[in-house]
Amino acid sequence: MTDNSSKLPPRREAVRLKNARKLSTSSQRWLQRQLNDPYVTAAKVHGWRSRAAFKLIELDEKYKLIGKNPRVLDLGAAPGGWSQVALARGASKLVGIDLLEIQPVSGADFIKGDFLEEGMEARLTEMLGGKADLVLSDMAPNTSGHVATDHLRIMALAEAALAFACDVLAPGGGFVAKLFQGGAEKEMLMTLKRRFSNVKHAKPPASRKESKEMYVVATGFRPD
Ligand SMILES: C[S@@+](CC[C@H](N)C(=O)[O-])C[C@H]1O[C@@H](n2cnc3c(N)ncnc32)[C@H](O)[C@@H]1O
Image 1 (cartoon, rainbow, N blue to C red):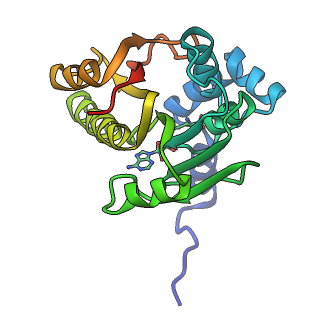
Image 2 (cartoon, rainbow, N blue to C red):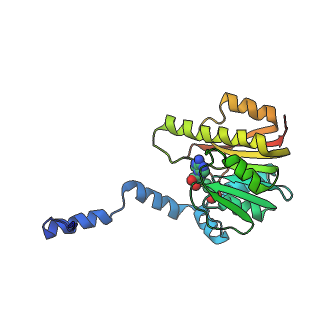
């Protein structure tokens, strides 16, 4: 049997335990931000699972994305804030996917899995039971701290989401995807402009100013 007890003298062990209980500087900063963030408080008051819920509310207020009884696909849905908002604002059917488990939301069907996995698109489409009116992608990879790598990863997710949206959207449908920094790359922007009648970049007020995230909002899908 292994002995996990510390071999330090008692006083040094007491100091070690005290330090282990202290929050790292980045955790302290995170905690401070949470405590000072009105969106975090408002999310709790309104019962939204994430402060991100307000980003979709603000995008919907501005671009009228959700409309009447749409069928919605929510990519990167955990913990479920956007799904809650889409359903509260009129979605008739919602299918969501995330790498993480999502607690049930009334009216939504969730899959735990990787959107990039082979066969996942077919599975999502089958679950939706027909064409989608709105494809949402708030997917974000875990940040590596390396700006260029993070940028490439998020762009790969957004591009995959766009390719999927072009396969599953009904005529006139909408698409929202999270991007970083300068917005859609040239090639992605070309596809967006060709396949949608309206394409905008947006940074909703709920998106933290210091965050490099932004969204592309495309409406009026044109099938090939
Ligand atoms: C910012 S969170 C989404 C928050 C969500 N919109 C809400 O309001 O609750 C981004 C999510 O994208 C998910 N994600 C990242 N890569 C993914 C992938 N390849 N497939 C599925 N989900 C992914 C992450 O697990 C994470 O939960």
